[in-house]
Length: 34
Image (cartoon, rainbow, N blue to C red):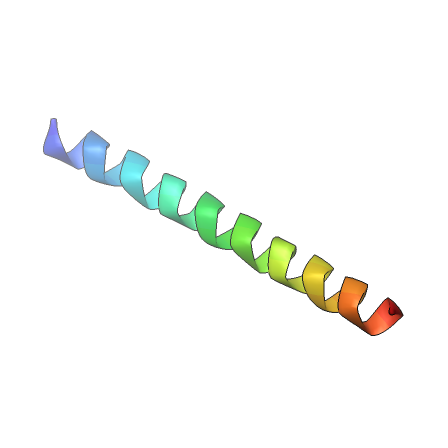
């Protein structure tokens, strides 16, 4: 139902935000190394 769909959406958003945050930190590390 809608409840399980919302739960799944929240997990997907959290995963996406965590992945984006990691990519941003990697990018900053790469820039600082240059």
